[in-house]
Image (cartoon, rainbow, N blue to C red; front, side, top):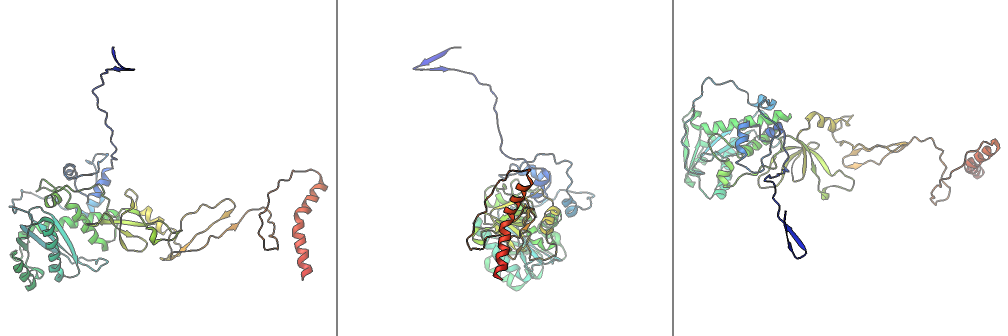
Length: 425
């Protein structure tokens, strides 16, 4: 081996191994968690999604033997006897043709009083947008909102609109609006929903995914709108059997970002801003994940103590924690069933005393101390000055007279105080 000298330094040529050492920092998740985050999609769709979106979570196990209770409760149906590939002719571009249909009435009202959901599906991209209404007469108002949002986002105009003959679409106001906007209305033949099959199938997909998410985490049915809205958000960002890109990318010309995916209904803790709490108040509140908010970098969560839906940015979710464990923690300390009492924090008592802390409507009751020590207590001096008691060490003695004298010295202050009190009386 030879080395060439350059000044005071020798340069030595070495040959390295042709081995690349790669380290990855991405954390792999169980397939059950990723499956639930993505709205219970099949594993085949997940494999396609790996190249269609950024931030897709990686899985740490095989999914071949995975059986999901949510899928069984929400999607199970009879096997088909035969199935032939569907032949459809798609439109030429985004917003060339919009399909629409109304779902409902649902058996349970949302907290806002909605019982219907209206969907608008782009024929070219298969992109779906869903709105929730209290009555069918609001469909025209929602279509105006959809038209403005999509045309501003894509720079294109809606050309055709396909729906059934429902009164919400066949009314005079709806017809006049379409005619004024230059949109041709294509209506299906009565009692032939097959002619509006795209909207019918999309509604079924939304309801099935929402049903899976509700049953998977045991969420109350009144939150069906949040589940359907989250289902639409997911469907627009996962592959399907028709397009080679995600529906989101076809419309917005960019890949969707999925690094912030969470399991619907997951339990967690949302941060409380400093401006909305006092010094000793908790810095987080218990919540459930209810979905994503378009246009906002935050999550929609349900405050499990107040029942309010909030949009928060900083949340820590426990996606693998069972619902039963969490609910036990919330309700376990409420012995009297008082809904206004928040769950007290567990405080470890110090040796020789017990502490209790209860919170009533954000008012903190002072800690109560119960003295359990067996040491003698020296009465406080009669004068207003507060003094610190001194710690003294007394050597043990075997002399009875000396021990009796020490005992008198310790009891003396108490005896003197008692004597003075009698003289004063």
